[in-house]
Image 1 (cartoon, helix red, strand yellow):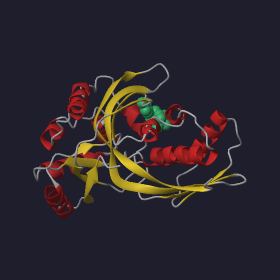
Image 2: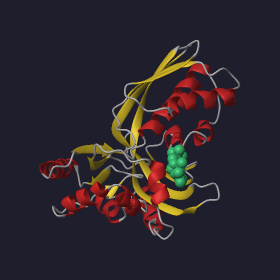
Image 3: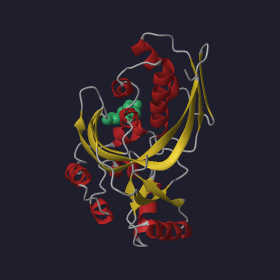
Length: 282
Ligand code: C5P
């Protein structure tokens, strides 16, 4: 049996995100289409005599990877003993799901090391709202509930070309949800249109641009004024930037790779940290 497992933990984009309402438990019911991004952390999980989790940057006291080891060990009825090492590339608290993806990679790694047949998506739901998507391992999915219901969608034949604007700022998810007003809704029909296009295999860049709505945008802009100024700077150059998750990372859907590189150049000249990426990649 292998005593160490190396995994890639991809980032995600929310192509569209609807907030359906606040729940009695304080969380919000969501509906969102998520896709993986070609930006990833490297995660190593190995057998060890105790729990030791190391990350290449300081992730603060609430390390989701240690929580993932403990949660899976509890569900398999064994000691939470594992060595975890994460080399971060995905920026923290950016709306790209890096910490959640690392946690899901740890679940997969520990399950392989321990030969444990637990339902990883169910265990993931107890760790964080974005973890089930990554634990499911789909490149595209319609996610609902608090994030625990994951319906994989067929990936388009080719990856999606996108431009990602990565600010150096951090924005706490909880702060953006706390800022969200009950009447800031309306993206549900956009989420459903995107999900239907994936399901029917008719995804186009134009369709994704039309439906790139996010009910958290106004709340994120109130928490982080820079988001509105970056979007205005891009709009003045003919580029519509959408918000992923609770932000502050923004993205634009490109027609193809050349279009993504062209937009990244324009945005970089405008002073934004923009890069061409591919989404919906395994
Ligand atoms: O689940 P996770 O720990 O990632 O969520 C961080 C915070 O974001 C929660 O404490 C909650 O305030 C908010 N949240 C929410 N509804 C969701 C997901 C997150 O209100 N569906």
